[in-house]
Image (tube, rainbow, N blue to C red):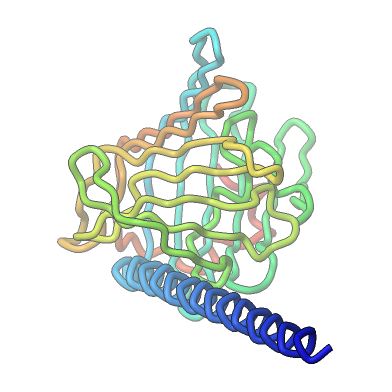
Amino acid sequence: MMLNIIMNRADIRQVWLVVIIVLCGTTLQIAKANVYAEKGLQIAKERKKRDMGWGDSISEVIMTLRNAEGKESIRKMRMKNLEVIDDGDKGLTVFDQPRDVKGTAFLNYSHPTEPDDQWLYLPALKRVKRIASRNKSGPFMGSEFAYEDLTSFEIEKYRYAYLKEEVLNDVNCFVVEQYPLDDFSGYKRLVVWVDQQHYRPFKVEYFDKKNSLLKSLLFKDYKRYLNKYWRAATMEMMNHQTGKVTELKTLRLEFNTGLNKQDFDKSSLKRVR
């Protein structure tokens, strides 16, 4: 009987030892996750910080839609953007070519914590359609870009986790995971390659709600404007599940053009030319 009691006490000590080891391991894992989350957040903050103060811009862009067989259709559009202090940026896109989409206009108000406001003016119907938050994962004008891909980068939209450092196309990059906080996002997570020198995004991988790789966005041909702000002249979005590709190529880009909030008024969408 006495022997049994001693053995039980020994067993109890072993159990407690295992519990302590597990708790220590869990605590270390939590601490490690917190460190990586904080490092991912700091990289996102630095990325945002380095792109503040650009004011406004106007650009001319060629959108090329390419199906899995390589057949292409080309659209020409103008884009206006306005930086908004203490809120997300505003953007207006107007299609000029081809004729079947000419006059179509897309207006976007990004917000850091609230759902973005988005409207699409369809000239054939002569009406402005509001893009509901639950539909923002849908394709924009038949492209591989979703409506939610067209908003400005806002730190508060995501939870972050630093993954690793990696060389991408001879450029040293941080690799960071971003988890959308909006329940209506079409993505479970994004993996972003950010270059370590200028904090520019070089590549984004989008994973669907089932955590399968859906799309990849490549940023190419970076140019610097106003001696500070970097913009990729070419962005290529590939859908890995359909084989379709959409390329955005910027032909002309100007900053400090004098745009203001009135240029992004929803009521003026029907009059946009």
